Image 1 (cartoon, rainbow, N blue to C red):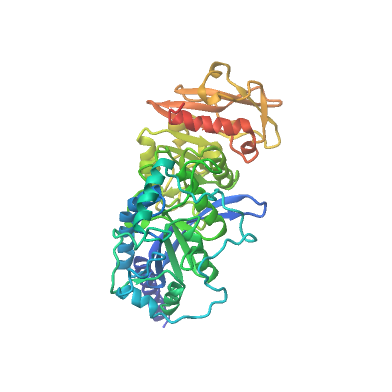
Image 2: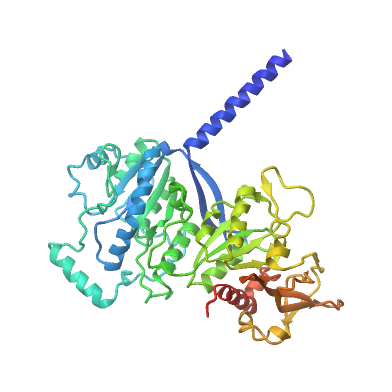
Length: 525
């Protein structure tokens, strides 16, 4: 009898495992990104894996019109539309419900079966009304990080004047030139729906849809305000995800905060991640390495890999990027909220120009660590902070099955020799190394000795290929230790500093050091 029970238990476990595997194979897999505010008021980046059932998921395409009042906006829509069509086609074939929402164009589609499908949806009363336009909740969120009071058009005055004259001549007295959704995005009359109203939610309710993936334009306007889009769907307690690489903003760099158009879009996306919903990218849908980026976005691509719990760099680095690196296209790969050793979407390293590592004693799945190794072996520049000297090393023991370590990373890549650190209560004093006073990474760094809060690492002796930039000392210890250095790895630019605690990120000297290091790594003046 006991043997029979064991057999039945084993069979049940096998059936359960097979069912789970089948469920995972049919579900949509995404790496979500959100900004989370901790009790101390600081924001951090949180990434985790999410699975969605296709039959419970709708895709909303927001206002991807055939043209626009702003010339540059129309051109970016046309550039993004082929990728959106690929994404929509994939998700439709997986079983998602596609809702096309080109506002103010319903007359064009009055006889289309997808339009009739939306009109047939039975209206329901919602606790929070789905108005024609949903205003931002000033009690719930801060003001938008960009000034779009001029309408946000970034086309030059002469070009825009000519563009406006052309479309107004054809608009027949209307205040807008669009007539339909851009043709590049295909509409399936048998499966899709077309609407620009609360009908979208009625359709979702009828089908038992709980997940909404929003894409389209513009993040600071229609994506937040339209009744079928992200903010209203959040109000209806839907699980909303914004596809952050399949969107754009109406932002003119001549207005606050005076950054590039593409950086302005990123700031609005960050606002949405903070206050409204997580984001995803199209790369996971299409099975490609990189998210979409506009051809006009020529900024260097910097990836920040963050996985440590001691020095809060999942908070300090995003803040640093926001304040110091507006001229860079920065992306984050953060240790999964549910698995400290997993870093999803490391595929983006393939087209990164520089990698910044802030990791402590993580044993990555072998395939993930191989992606980091491949980046290093490519010869592209790398910056490493504090605990990254022991980023992929364990103190003792073996890694979990299927995971890998890289204890030689410090020695072979950084040129370091981390062994331990001096006491946390000892004050660390830092100064320039005399031989490196003219090094570009030290430009703007105080000439006089200054103190830092982080404990002093024991890092000497360094490899012969290194150039020491800063040294540190603690009271009562004669030995000075290297605190920042570069390593010439067969021409590859490597910069490491054992600084990087939260207090350092409040010091202008450290912020300047890190920014200089990134610019030096990319060989930018």
